[in-house]
Image 1 (cartoon, each protein chain N blue to C red):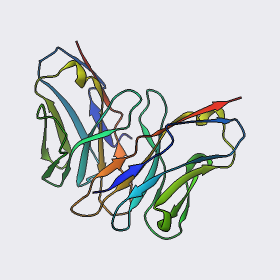
Image 2 (image 1 turned 120 degrees about the horizontal axis):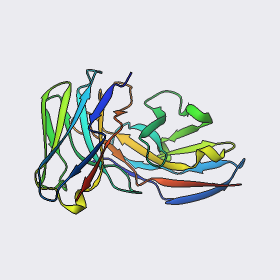
Image 3 (image 1 turned 90 degrees about the horizontal axis):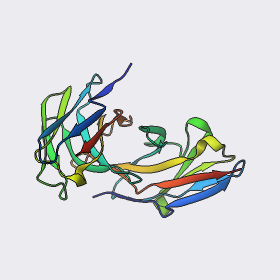
Image 4 (image 1 turned 90 degrees about the vertical axis):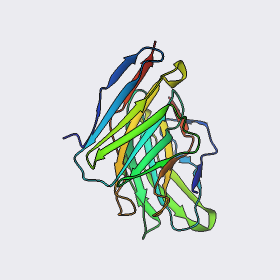
Length: 114
Length: 113
């Protein structure tokens, strides 16, 4: 069965600074990987996804993520954060046929300070 | 246009009184998921359907049941809600391994009184 680990429960970053949120996955085959963002009281919004091809994927709101098979990682990055980026970020992995479920990590809460 | 619709958005039920949450989709996706999300926690998968095949997570309480009468609709039944079942319930749909992401509904916030 697949699993996702987000080692950082809470990260605080200054506005304008760079950001990296970590995600490690466990899955035997090629995973489908996602990053979602959730603002307080809101639903889940997809930031970006990786299925195959270029290991550096671009998403919305200036986010990008890099798939590294050798490290089983799919870290999310942004060169310069904005106060509106404060939210909860979830990494997720989708399994293959026979294990076709979408599993979320525990999330990382991002706080932005002026 | 909303593609995954959950009704109602807010549900208040009495302790022990059965309640049903509904989810409909216009995407013709073959996978439908139900997640429970409590405050400041990650969505927790309760079960999912792959077409008509029902897949229950091992730690989903027996108090939670689901029905999928057709491709478009899926229901979550809580037979005897307890205070601990108060949460946001999220429905999502997907076409597995076809290069698209899961689409989420707005959720139903369940309050148990």
